[in-house]
Image (cartoon, rainbow, N blue to C red; front, side):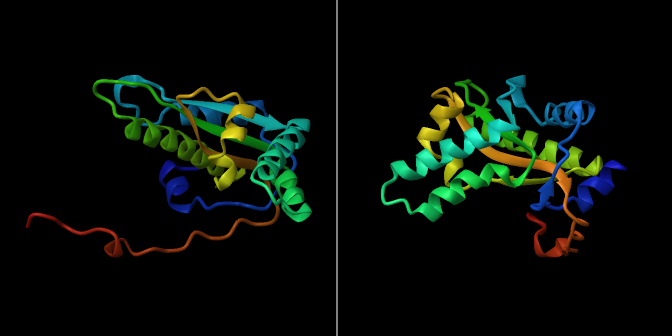
Length: 185
């Protein structure tokens, strides 16, 4: 697939099934992530892969986080446990924030987000389905601790990756004029 085609036609694919990407496909996903813009070459990111029984373990961690908030219903706990089971592979994108005289932390977060986007584009280019999710579990301190995050790390998102269930939708056509304007003329 041509690069511009991948950029113009990528869509989120939330309905996923087995199989997960193979080793060569995964390597391409992560190589694409590592090409993200990176002022200062800080490489302010890291990635966790979660699959197999690890998904159930993550579901339990999510349920613990929901329970800790108090008054959790059984339905809320069941939903939390099921969240990681929506795809055969989850990639947790983590920003590793550093003190730097020239590169503010917001720029480092954006670089980690670009790395996540690189994974999504590389997945689409290979015919792999993927969707980026956040929600409460991306910001929960108990979940961060359970995933082994350091104090300077943040979850940027959970990328759910697998084989699309059915044909992915067509990307909507957007008019650039609604988002682009000239300044200073």
